[in-house]
Image 1: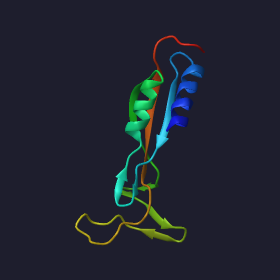
Image 2: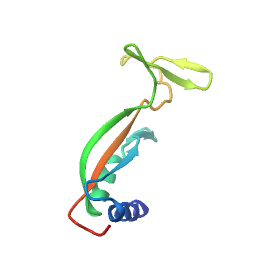
Image 3: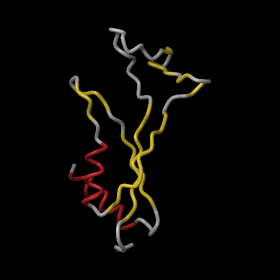
Image 4: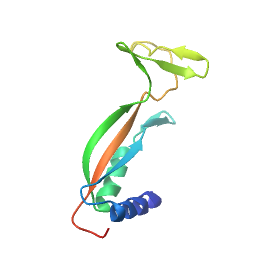
Length: 109
């Protein structure tokens, strides 16, 4: 993540006082494990002089009534599976994580 650290440091320098930086990420499964990049992003942002302000969830699928409409593929709709189901869920990202940061201290602009 060295490139991320450099980006966050550069973003801090151009961020206006009172401004915020939003970083969007999504947890995913890799080799049977959940990989959540948000904690690493927060650590890198802190090291770059950015304060973690808030975590926001952005829903990435349409909401119809009280249901999320999940499209598993270009031509098919799917339903979220029951927790007890042995079937694999559709491969779809229902939400994204939005981490908001603010610049610490004065710093250059």
